[in-house]
Length: 538
Image (cartoon, rainbow, N blue to C red; front, side, top):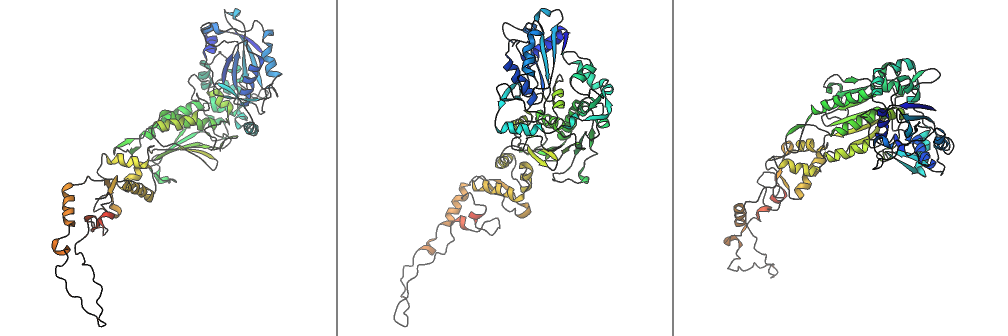
């Protein structure tokens, strides 16, 4: 336990900090049960911090006036009791007592740091709490079982590095950049110690420290941990070397830098790809900026750093693939991917969230945001799969609209559409599947085949408006002539059979052709007109 006096600017930063997945504040009047729930929820989730001694924003308390702490350390015993006695098992924590320089009469606030635990912690009411966003929730039944199973997994981010220690870490430029905006102001060595980024006995730094702050993490982490970005000039599922547009880019650096540079590189490559739009124009591919950011952030912070491989980002003519080393962590599955969350690397996730403009601001909302933003942009939903030991996210360039709608929109500006063009627009790979779309539209009376085009040259067009003059001519041709249709006026005597019995009289055969729609189609297909170009019911 430490006591420290901080400047008013740092105190104001703590007061104004928004509650989040990793941060909360409570009044000094809060009961022990409230403190228990927050502490247990953080320990059962990804860890975090909370401060006791700050009132909620309101008419009676604004700015630094919200700082209303304990009059002495003895008065703050309720916090210690809640942390060490009333939670089973006790949570791993550290506590610091803060007062404001020149405002000591406003009392001491307790700043509590909770680390993620390998145990499942129960509050005094025998309930299990977890942190979700800026709130603490209780879980029961299978959710508790899943949490218990997930807790058993050791994380590679806590492994010690052989050739990287606290002296190397303390002088990193990225750590200095981070601490410039960190509140309350903390020297590098003290921050490293409080955040458990080193082994206290040997001074060796952990993998998480190297990933977050080392100038070149691949130089200190004994695994491949960069990002490779490649552009392939193909739509094939399994690209070949000759499809590479250029030498892939390799992006290295602290996690924050890697995320920013990867987003910029991938965005530039995507915008260099032009695809056919339903309007018939070729235009660059554009994804909502939140989509690429969330997927790349997710890959960097949740990948398995124990696997010696880089994150792979492939930009194809019709899609983007992001391959993150490692299957889904803990209790996560493809089925609960958008509902639940579990951090393989809680220290990386938590400390990255402490940057002034954190890339992982909305904890737990990343992939849900991706799905929502793709829908808003009228693009098809991303595809999540597990291939071997990789979690793969695929973003298609295909519009969200049904293929039938895309075809009709295209025909608003073009006279005809081919199977190949239809597949490019809709993202359908099979020629037969594309034909099914055309056949459905034909059955609905929306389109018809272009006369005279068959085989590889076949095309479709909107149903042409009927020509009244042509219809009248068809009807005239279809009327039976007097000579051929009138029954004979003279009744001929039927021939007599040998047995004296007259044969049955036959009706006169009509010599005219049937209605126009039953005639051979003029396009030369050999089919009846009603079965070919006259499907709309001429």
